[in-house]
Length: 203
Ligand SMILES: [Zn+2]
Image (tube, rainbow, N blue to C red):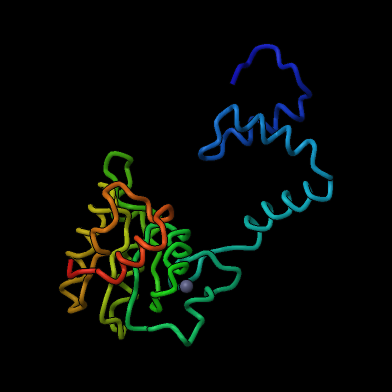
């Protein structure tokens, strides 16, 4: 952002700076949002500020699957209507939202919180792989569905997990290749995702 003369109030400048740090928000969008927020009623601004603080203060990670939750166990892990014999492995909590939206998967999840990426310095110990293996040992799980992204990091992670899980005698499947290479799960449409889940194959 231009650090020269700032033709606006300091408070607005600070807000623009903070918004500009968000993913997908460039300087222009940050400016537009900041001036939009300036115009909305104070009550609405307060709701937004409270919502942001709440996600930081009230949420944590599920102790079993590492999904975002407001209690020790997330809603999915707590439900007795989920198929306990299947675990779907995703990179990020928002991937669960995308898969749940299709409504066809009734099993459990495990969130890795990242993918193996040597170029970005993310190793096998930096994501929740050990927790997954511990979870699988002695469990009644008979299928693990690898739903990591279809980019290089996601594929590397899937291959690594496949190597670790197969010896446990658990079936390992990967979402069908209906998903174009490079797709991030959270942006995939329902139809493509549904086909990908239904058409999952032995990995
Ligand atoms: Zn959970």
